[in-house]
Length: 221
Image 1 (tube, rainbow, N blue to C red):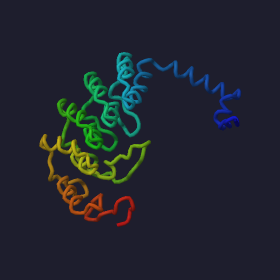
Image 2 (tube, rainbow, N blue to C red):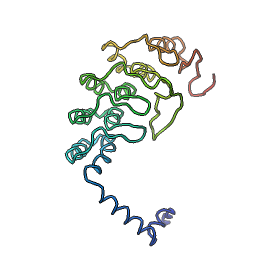
Image 3 (cartoon, rainbow, N blue to C red):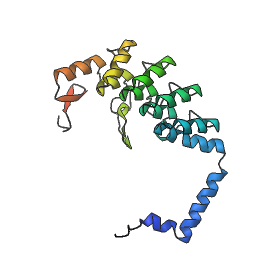
């Protein structure tokens, strides 16, 4: 069997300079207070749904409202991953139920998109704003890992917009049962009811934007 070739990085860390850099990194990390290290690790643990790790980090003093890429909090990550028990613990520990990411998306938006009814129920029971809207002016788009952040594609949207756009049927029904507004327009003049009607009338099309449909998967107008 052929020996797997090492990458340039693997080769570099074995050099004198690489070993020195690695040791300096370890020494620097040890200088950071345990509370701050715990806060740094909390987001990843919440994203992974690791309840035991989340609990341990909180006990070490981790900041449950710490933000990372695009201002997401651990609660955003728990909602995205449908990690109900982690979300419960974070909220009990003081997590902001209506925390906004860079584009004003709240954990409720994340849960609606992911069709996580259990997390939706939890968040609303803790006072989450069912009518929260994403930034009405942002029109760019970005990707991070497997997460396609819809609120920059659909600015000025409420959780019900996301649930219906994503065809998260259970989440949409849950939000409707909690009096979500089906007639409110997003920044592109699309209402949840209008989106639903358009998709029923035009099953081969999706993504209604300013009266223009884009054909599924082709990008052809």
